[in-house]
Length: 229
Image (cartoon, rainbow, N blue to C red; front, side, top):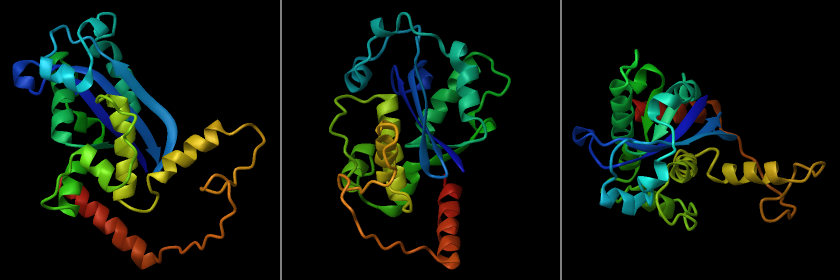
């Protein structure tokens, strides 16, 4: 199962006011494990950025003067997400902006859902935690995902945080998986891959594997969540 955790930053809140995407960040998961592959681009929107939006993401129009425009990166972007499941928090917002960009350039397939399927983690979170705050910040706190290094919103930063939250929220491989992958990639050549999670200490862990019935029930729950998007 190939999933792309995606986030965008924009010049404002509404395509009806001709606001545009200024940043796209994507993180790839394969069978619920991070691969290390990312797609990250800043984009020149050819318009001003609302003050409120700039306070959120800290990106000014001047920062983007030499950045490419959406049509210049669209082929690479669509190839990266092709046939994957997009994991997005408040997918209506991001998909709406991506569709808008595709339509502006008169793309032959101007809808994101023509290239990939979409899973909305906000819909999932509301089903799991009704009546509670389900922003990405709130979910990071709820699932103990460290967001302390994020001073402002950023597409790639938020995609990475969402990947951790999604893995924790859906069980199985938890957010710790991303930390383990980072540790493996950073490990000196020749060092053993078997390292205790608590700074290399030897741990006697009992692994209890799910039964066929439990696996089937879990898959049925995930499918039900996808159908609500």
